[in-house]
Image (cartoon, rainbow, N blue to C red; front, side):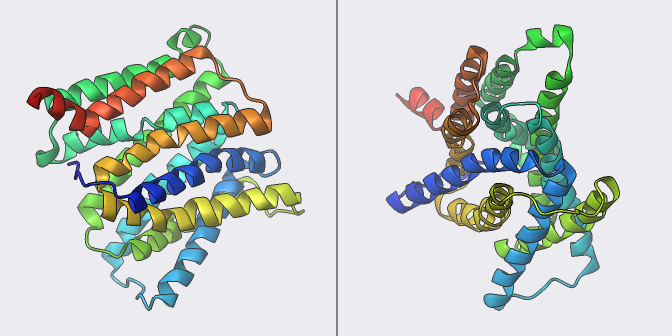
Length: 302
């Protein structure tokens, strides 16, 4: 499953840039949520990002897919990769710190391995991947603090919503492998976001109604950041990193995002995370390193 390639200095720079961009997305989303309902905020994210990516596609001379089968696949992909996780995480961020959201988001890679093992015959769990998954799950449980569920509250439900979002990402990755192979990345991303917009724009109008006033300049800048930079541009950059560095190295991005998101949340919103969140991230990081496979192979060969 994991294609290991060498990280060149340029690939490291692009991976670092992507981590900075996505690390800032958690804060920008939270800032926007102070003024914009969470369903509408997701509609803005997928709608404006889709428009931006179609501009890129047309500028590069790409062709809009026409096959109904493909558009059905894009609709499902948009539901799994955007509509459900973006909505669940946006609602979760109303009750959970941005830093903790980024930690829980790192579990995407763990659930991705589990779902791939269930769906694809060539991605079954080895003992090393099993250990990595177990460590990852332990890290998530530690970060959440399972003792908090003795008195189940809105914060506990919000954390579970964020975890559910990461599971959606995992199923989206499997769906993409099954249905969207061979498409140019910018066309696949633009089409997926279009499918997401078909769902989210009517949902926002139904749930939140037509916006009657403009948000503050700060909220508008936040929306601009997480739609145009952290979604549209980030998708293009991610696919480039994936092609150059491989899936195993791109997995590092889920770890590198966290050290960006936590300080930003502390600096801008004065968030303070409990000690168990940092301990959970450490265990989860170890699990992802084991899943990456290189450390295990070195130990066995040494």
